Length: 383
Image (cartoon, rainbow, N blue to C red; front, side, top):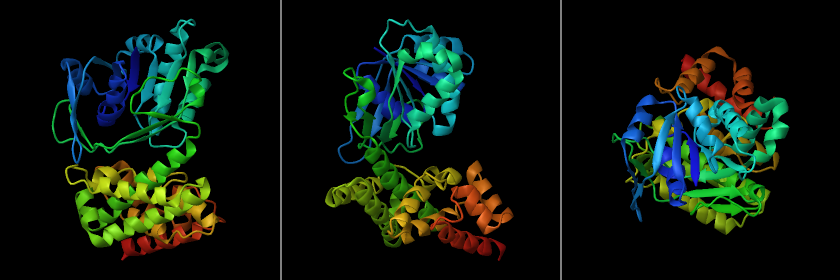
């Protein structure tokens, strides 16, 4: 069996690639970093170091890498004969993955089982987005190619911090979750030990996005505001911990009401997430977690997404709005979105900024709440 994975970075090697290896797949990593591709091809194995309680070291073998920017033909050939294709590149990069998949499907022997495609991204419906790009690019030829691929959405969760060491080894937390839609695969799901297949993925995706991602980003922005470097140190601050817990109580209230989750089970899940963030063995920083604040403040992301639905249902959003206010203060000269965020705050009025960044209509009940914190941030900037 063979799997092609787009994105040979830390998540690709330390999470998705590891589980595919454990499922018995030969791994073909695709990346555009020549240095990373070379390092992977120079290695015969790499180690995934799980740090924290219960962590163990795991070896990955039987892999190779292709630089898709200079050897697209080799990549397409691999896709044409693969069993599985996965991604961990970021939602905005999926459109650049799609042409390789279309070309691979065109070369694929129609007698082979359908290629099983899963986008493992921090976004709702990421595989649907990838499929839309593929279908659009294929155009009129899609009817002939459609039977050669099957697409399934996933929800993925594992903290993989920025890596201090060189080489291709990866440090991760012990916890992980990979939930995959069952229905698209029928009776032949991919063999991925540790993944679980579910009939309804939406509760898993939103539980993860509105608990893990919301909580992580909230910790990062309050941590940065307080001048704290590490995520674990930020949550060790009682004031920050209380603010993060309050935000997650609000998202939990939404999740329990919307998806009819058991409130006790969701409370245990929330507590597990906070314990993970407090893992002092994990060298995670507020700067890594807080990067790309414009994406994190967009309409269907971890703040505005749950807050909009919560306020529509008459639920509290005070803590989520406070987290968004902290996000507006995030400054990192090395992150293009952080720089752009501060530029927009200086150049747009509060209403225009809120509309552009959050995607909310001015009539939405959350709009005025965000305008208020945007205006406060702009006042502070002009002082």
